[in-house]
Length: 121
Image 1 (cartoon, rainbow, N blue to C red):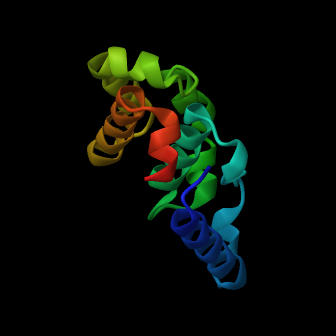
Image 2 (cartoon, rainbow, N blue to C red):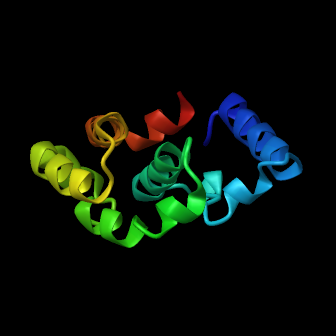
């Protein structure tokens, strides 16, 4: 079960973006079905959100295949087990240390917590 407040907040934020002048920024951004969300899909959406913030999506999108490879196809455990190697590889694709560090930190948190509990808190 997904936290109702989280689901409501997500839906409201997405609806606002869809009606805003920034609608085009949602193009290509994954819209995960929260009731079917996995750790990997969550990380993928998190990555798109973090990388897309402050940048045109088209600029981010062109680098995503290489970035996904650097993140070992969003494998949470692989990232958590080799954060320095992942960081080095990711920085070669997307040169923003704080964004990369946020992604690696989230992967570590996902790897270290029970997924079902994480979703509801």
